[in-house]
Image 1 (cartoon, rainbow, N blue to C red):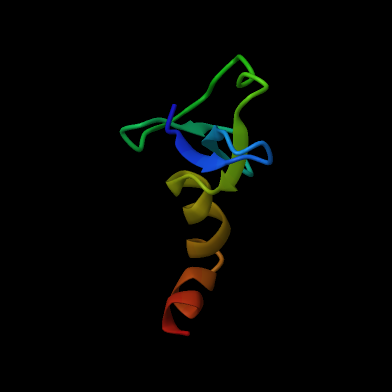
Image 2 (spheres, rainbow, N blue to C red; image 1 turned 45 degrees about the vertical axis):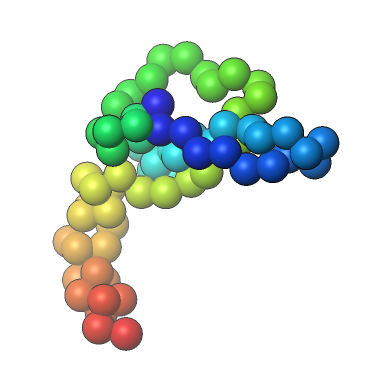
Length: 71
């Protein structure tokens, strides 16, 4: 699981994990996206992103990725 740390409201560092907003895969520390059966511990913060597979399905196949990159 890829984690980052940011200060929480109490001044402590809460680990952050990145979850694909489409397929719910979780990015690990090596940048690999895997399906996880268990939920993250309650002290983790969740950041949403897109795994490469979903990014390709949503943007590249629809012709939107090239338009976004050209902007």
